[in-house]
Image 1 (cartoon, rainbow, N blue to C red):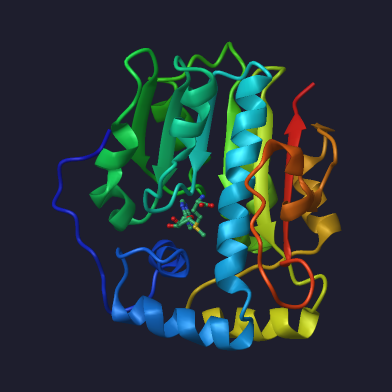
Image 2: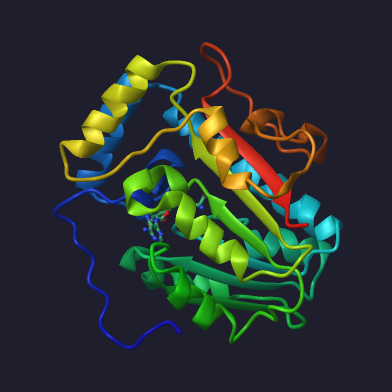
Length: 267
Ligand SMILES: C[S@@+](CC[C@H](N)C(=O)[O-])C[C@H]1O[C@@H](n2cnc3c(N)ncnc32)[C@H](O)[C@@H]1O
């Protein structure tokens, strides 16, 4: 699934995966990514903290799902590998966990090898695809995951790159429609709820480069879970989602970072 064509990295414009890597202090980014990253940090100094809080939410949600019997994960918008990756968290709890990763950025494909170091009992696979093509993702994921058994669909810090007009809600519905009862949706999402003015400026920074940032408020984020049973504490600030599972990120600044996280079960 990792493809045969040479991987081309476009360093002439910033990419979300590489900017996120820069926020996390990684090395797989380019001057264009850093330049836009610095512009966003000048607007909102808590962006690097948001990235860490988000990563910690992914760890806790994955751990909770594995502890609650989920053995299959479909993670779309994986990002450049950053240890521990989702499969490492899941396989710590359940060594036989099967994980399919998916991203549309060639830089992730270039580093996908790190995502493929599974436990011997488990499986990991990587596919290069766009979340706006859910049918393709399902077709490929089916080769690795058993869709008669529960799957956790993981969309961590992904949907704020997809506008309503590009079918953000519909694509989540289409993906969930393929999963059996007892499956889960786990997602996190940046929000402009506490400071819409700053949010509008952030979206303008993306738009000026021909990129999409679609910040949503808590109610709009909750709509991705329509028809699902929300796991406690529901749609919460990512820092407040099951802190008892550990990895709470300490950060300074004014108030909690503006990002939500939630997990819901398909009845
Ligand atoms: C902010 S990063 C999040 C990485 C990881 N999920 C995490 O939260 O730590 C967002 C990721 O979504 C990917 N992405 C953005 N738009 C996408 C699309 N249309 N299809 C698939 N992946 C996409 C980006 O390439 C990037 O790797």
